Image (cartoon, rainbow, N blue to C red; front, side, top):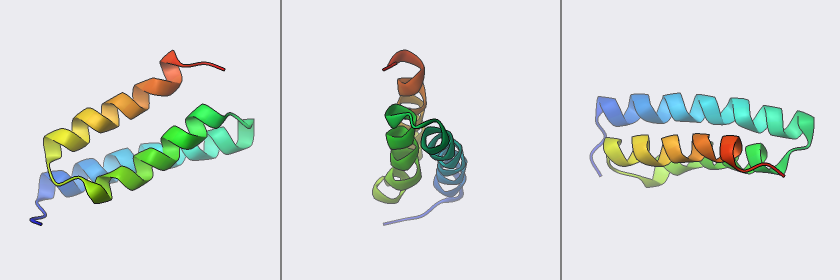
Length: 69
């Protein structure tokens, strides 16, 4: 697997946002942001394309906004 700078930076960005979602979900006891935050932190390890990281990361960031429990 080839690592490039764009993939690394996008992964860092979405992992940082995921950490914020995870902390928010844990403190507020909200399961949707908690799970999305965990997914945002983990998924860049399994994706090898920067465009895929951007698309999946954007989708995961939008889920807590549209899905409310």
